[in-house]
Length: 256
Image (tube, rainbow, N blue to C red; front, side, top):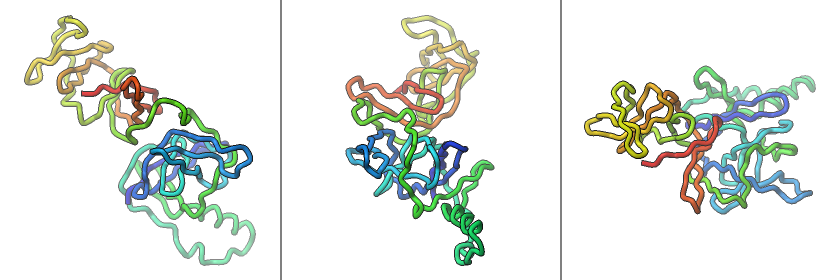
């Protein structure tokens, strides 16, 4: 099975959850508040439709930045960390067939019934949430969400990118290779700071005098700050510019 590994920050800590991705329609960052007095907290907008927001039961002041869109609801989370293939370790069914002997045991079983098992990824435990226990949040905090009247629209969900310096992002599959900056020949022409030989001459833009040169199809970037990141691709419909929104900040996407 495939799962999205997520985190929900709340008043007293962080819950680490695994949500099934085979039933997922998409991911939204667009929040639409519900009218005052309604029982629903609000809606997530995705491809022109509104999905009522639900989340983990009995969390006080959960923080939402992303909404995982399913057929009938949107599940609010703070972060989506990765998508993984995993066989979860199931919770024993016997636990729910036995009658608790006291109220304390009943409370424990109620808490445990929120989950159907666990997924372990890179040494960390994520609990597979049981959607039977979905609840509409009462006092959630929507963090940096984009409201429906804003002009940006999410074009893609999660993808793998390489961050260049502290300014740009490039899709990982568009990087041809990464070479040592010692192979670069400095020669200032127009916006370029030199060139590098990678089967042919490719112009280089120097971002920060770093020790690496990241080679793309027809251009290369010199930088000492390279890291992998996942995030959301946002596009301004009028300017045609795309940016990658991540937990580390927002980066302009270089399109090859």
